[in-house]
Length: 321
Ligand code: TXA
Ligand code: MG
Image 1 (spheres, rainbow, N blue to C red):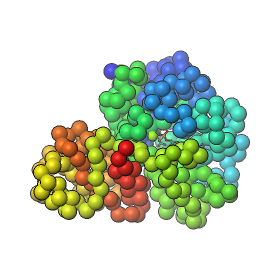
Image 2 (image 1 turned 180 degrees about the horizontal axis):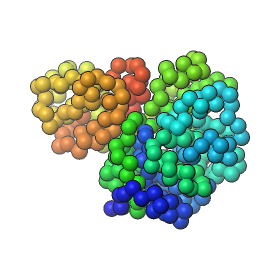
Image 3 (image 1 turned 90 degrees about the horizontal axis):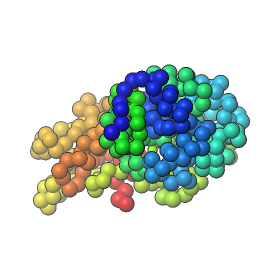
Image 4 (image 1 turned 60 degrees about the vertical axis):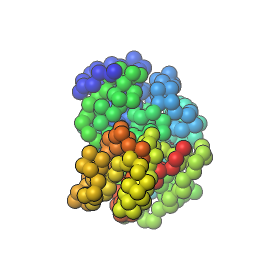
């Protein structure tokens, strides 16, 4: 198992030696390595069991530093950088050759983000290189939102996890780029679409793909628990599965579904608060996945604000592999 602590000097030392550290961000925990060191980046792909055509996000601590790695920040995206960094926004920007091909899977853009979590902000500011950091989960599984999640799944492969407590946002960053001059969203996430459109006007949304390496952020089967995950109208699903005699657990948005035993259900937000639901989503999916049941039943959230990003994750989780 990995050591878990708050020692930034220790994390720095491990990263400088070319090894990996689990890091907290406001979105989800990342599996971080020196983005400019190809060996460290290779370790990330190996540790996650991630295909090399799925590129990584480069994390750094200031816009000045971003300019070391990208040719320019186009005006439309600069507005977003100014508004939402540090925070749960990733921008796809034309990369400089200093960024290794392995980080970008050979694409001519690099995904960049300035996270706002205080521990990781501090870590980034004392490093003289940026961090490549995908979510710290095995490829295809639910992203980690607590240090213990990272330890449970990657603890045998990582020596140190920086503990920043539970992630405040709980969903990965929103990924935005320019496609033929149009602001385009590649992954819904912690900054909702409305807030982005308030800054830059109507934006384009890319559809999901199952295997298109050109839009790798959009691989459809993702964020999946190991148990079958069924989405629908909960009252009906509960009735159907009870009648069939199949053991199930329930994840609801705000309803308590009194007919279901307490230890077989999780309510994401009793007050129907979308931020709270997003924050609780992945940890809840993990708990439900570990229950002694055959299937997880869940419902979509209202299709507004962060609800859209949560629904995106729920729909992807419900795709059976
Ligand atoms: O919130 C987050 O973004 C977290 C934290 C740790 O920062 N990171 C994260 O990384 O979610 P990851 O690797 O799990 O997801 C990054 C997504 C991938 O789906 C990848 O395909 C996409 O970003 N991506 C990276 N670079 C890209 C590029 N140049 N063009 C298109 N998609 C890209
Ligand atoms: Mg991920």
